[in-house]
Image (cartoon, rainbow, N blue to C red):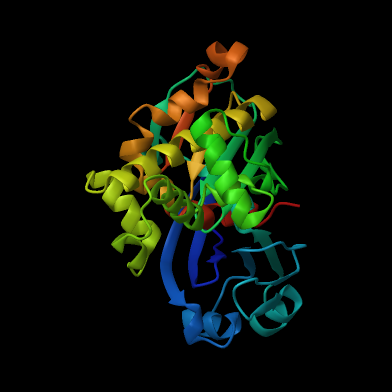
Length: 319
């Protein structure tokens, strides 16, 4: 069985693995993680990773790419597949967007890698959508083609926020004062979570919170909300989860996703208790005349932290 070098490259870390693909399932070996700031470029990491590399390489990158080059937004690196092929002997080297990799990775999902929020009534081959709140909000629309799901290019995280009640109206006004146009990514992301918490503080006339002084404020706010030790953090999580459900429901309608809605990224598994408490699905179902149809859409949280690497493996030999 032929191995493929796969990678998941963000602004902070690079993860590499050797992947073997058989019957739609991906096996990963030698999964290693590197801090980018300790290396001059990707080539230095690849040299460190292994003396001999496979002939095929597919890398998921955090930024727009034409498949042959990428310049990172939050990292002073530029990657050119021609240069990598010349240096490491790749006969095939491909770059894909990191959330396209998640879309490809839907082909590798197993029951064990999912936490079901709503079973629904799935239809084989129907459209799927993956959403992932993390540093930003990734959206991957996936259509069935050639015996598997293929992701379509999307910047769906930048659609506008659509409030549905007075509390959310006030949140929109608050964020508009900060950013002008308010995309849904301004809420459904790590930085967005912090801004929602600041909004909750402002509504109680509080000017500060020790949670904002933490090394990682979004993580501290999330934990305080989960533990119910801070009322504003708990309210922040409720708002975040409600809006996440509303947004997922909008994508379900837009793409008729009877193949399923899948929540990916680093935030969803950590917030699983609040995603499963009913607030997410309440927002998801609240679609007026379509509320009954919304209950037919499968909804799940992806628990597999390697879905991006597995997706890169699925994409490696695709045209």
